[in-house]
Length: 442
Image 1 (cartoon, rainbow, N blue to C red):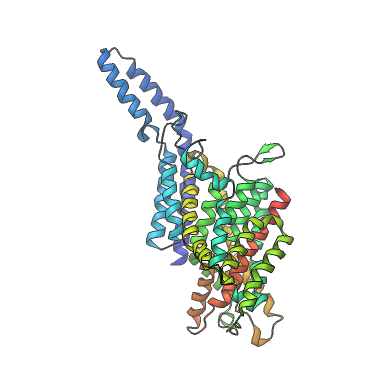
Image 2 (cartoon, rainbow, N blue to C red):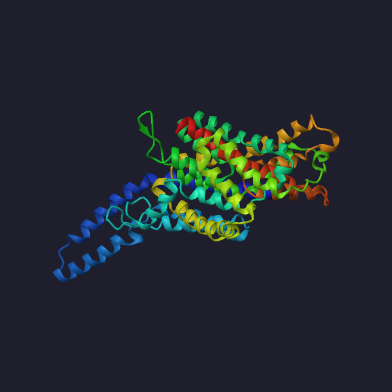
């Protein structure tokens, strides 16, 4: 069932993109034909009052969505409805997919471009353009990380630090896809932005693409493509599909004996260590990758608000009302940025394909590294390879998938607390990887 859902979703996306290419070939011809027909009808010899009435109707139609609709708009509206359907029917990341799906609808309501109405998200001075500035300037992702830090308990990672290596190993998906994107003809800036999808971290993907693949940055004297919309949609889509994509990979790469491994319970972490961790983490990651500070600085700051015990009001605001507000605005604007004229390109299909490959490679990387670590661990300290899949930073969904798969083979084997360690380290790892890519290419 899971594979069938996955193939259905990927197939639908592929069909939408391919069909849109054929429709776009006829749009200019249809537009020219409509223009000729309109000119002919208005030039007929009719009474002046009737002519004025027709002119009024024609002006009304000119500004309506019906007159300016193209096949691309209807295709993207179908995509938006599909996202909303996935969120409601299958409960796939509804807090993300419903705002994004609604944003796609908003961004693809047709209007007369060039008329100074200031409606489109790419029109300077429009309300949506002002909200979209938070995406293009990389403002929203750090605020999301602040909320994530205030929600996250790093106890499992502090208790068993070696599990951090699983989160690091999962980042192989980012760099493997970076090389794959270059092989497909994308320049390094675009390839780096596409590769970060493998981290399964939407805010990080948006942050990096806003810096490198924003349509403004130059590479060898030429502007790179604006890939923020396709990359964000791909990243959040695969985050929502974690319960569908990961289980087949987990079963393929592990044996029944490995799935039954029971790990030792994590030790109780004292408050002092919980407070010290975000401080040391901020300093260490900042020195390793200063470019990641906008993300990791806010992540560790949010966690310090949580663990200090004296800033409960600030921590509560960060993990509730603030992150909810930013998520709503981010989802709507990212969705609206998929305007048909910008989103429906051949590169979008390649980005979705590379994103899927990146996500699968990242999942496999964490699992295989767990199996590799077991070669050097005693029998009592073995790692259940199922938690390696949680190395991608879709918190807490990928950790929950590890728990579900573990219970499938042993109803008493609870892996959630163990899986949270590579899960939260994956968040840190993807942000560090983004910072490294930004340092070299920004």
